[in-house]
Image 1 (spheres, rainbow, N blue to C red):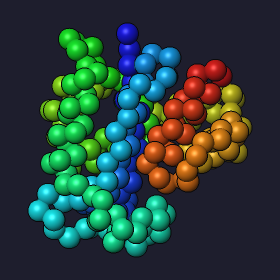
Image 2 (image 1 turned 90 degrees about the vertical axis):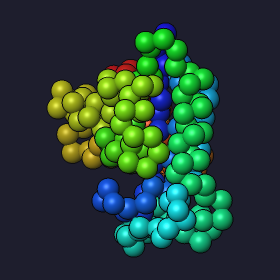
Image 3 (image 1 turned 180 degrees about the vertical axis):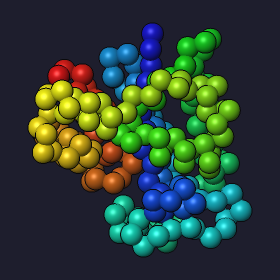
Image 4 (image 1 turned 90 degrees about the horizontal axis):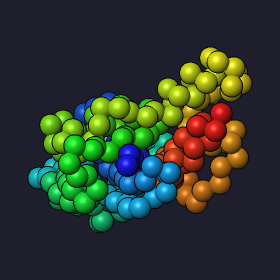
Length: 186
């Protein structure tokens, strides 16, 4: 039985040095049915300063003052994530990562929450990236050539309706799951 871990991060900007602010994880069964979730609001372990860029906060609309009131440390978030991963990984079977431009999100998780070695104890290298899949299908003529393969464009193209707003971790994760299902049907 192949399970997936779908996720999306929101950070303080586009560089790896910026703070990991939110992340939403959804564990899915082989049919893409959600069986578990974890939503984290995060801050540095030493309660140090947030590293943010104005452009990043403009995009994700995170109010850093309100965010800080509910944020937990990276260490606490990492412990919660490991607890969830242990619940869903047994034997040699690992979770398949699913996301949109997922390499950036994985780098943030490994930098701030788990580290590469711990991450790969639970999560496979066999990434399912909806951006790459959509680009491939676009080249094959299955998607319009002039369409952006951004998550927002794909959500719009497939008429996906989910609660929330773009650039919120949960919304982007749930949108990615729906887009992945739609891409598989192509």
